[in-house]
Image (cartoon, rainbow, N blue to C red; front, top):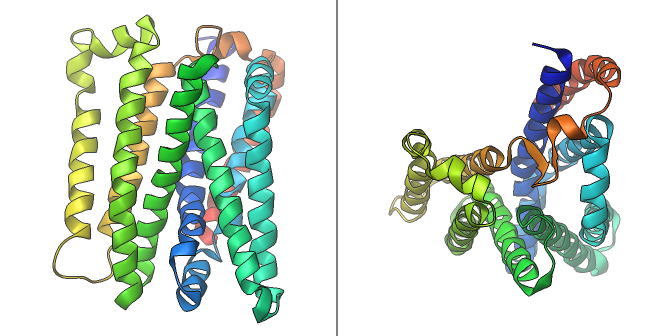
Length: 315
């Protein structure tokens, strides 16, 4: 097994891990920001406090994922970032806006606190919609026209709802009383749109590529892959059940189910697209840097990734 083969595999795995952890970890604090307008002043303080120690560390995984794409797969980085220039700009604008708002809400006078809360909500929503739009464009192979943009718009809305689901179920673990009842209502509403997004991506991805269709629906592969949609459906039902049971207490199961839904959906999408970084154009070996560069970079990754993991766990 040559280094030319296994090094791109290693970096593709590290990049996928970084993006999955980002989606889950930053997803719930983006979701909390999206839900802010539906809470009163006291509840907003509780919601912000629930993510305060974590949100800054969570965004580190996005930096790592994009950094790996740039260093290990520069050809794909150029194609992807060129095609997604505007939504990337809006994502960065939203992330910067929410970061500024988060810090200033603690320093501002009470008269301006609502302003910073609204800006934190706006930044969270803009970043979430931009990420969902990028996902839709990426799945469609950056196809233009009304159908590509319509699908990207749908994934943008459903991604924001998915983050809202993560955020509301996170709050269900951190709150009680009337605030908990509110978070359960928010979670139920977000769950439906999240399921719609999962179904839309699951149906569209095989339809846009004969190769992906064959990977999913040939036998016996279909048999071995069937647990992914089946377990996802079970997690959706379990999430709904635990959110709507009579005994209301601090809940951890809905958050665990929400994370499971994201992990399985991400795994299915990764299986569909592998080994391509740009569908139909570049696979991981075609897009990879020189083997010598990857060998040097690997030493940095072996230090950086465990350090970020430990930092995240510590925070």
